[in-house]
Image (cartoon, rainbow, N blue to C red; front, top):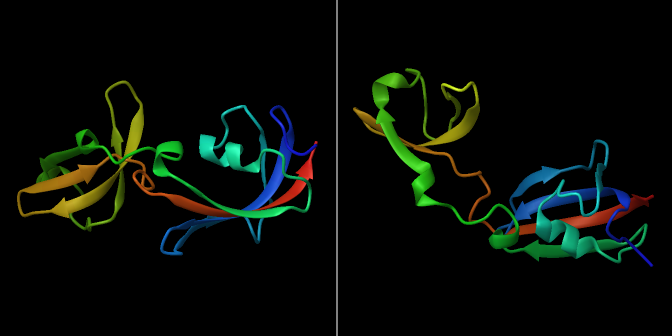
Length: 139
């Protein structure tokens, strides 16, 4: 019968970009555990494991639309360089705190003498993701 909505599953996985660069893996630690259909993982991931059985292995690609969505230009913004830490570098991740107490993470995309460009997109936005999974347990 295989995996269906409502099942609790344990899965080992390796997530890669299309060029083979690994961005995350569960190997070497506990398998990922989640309830299928509860929205705990990206939609495309759940769709691909439906029907699999314990011991099954599968490799699949999730298009960015079913992963973290497109990279949005409206989530990139400029700030005065002077408001950033002195030792900041391109690619660094920074927390931006809002007046209501919430915060979000941005990546430093460009650094000029006066202005910096920050990107609040998820680091995997706009990227197709390749996963290799192994079903460990279904309950």
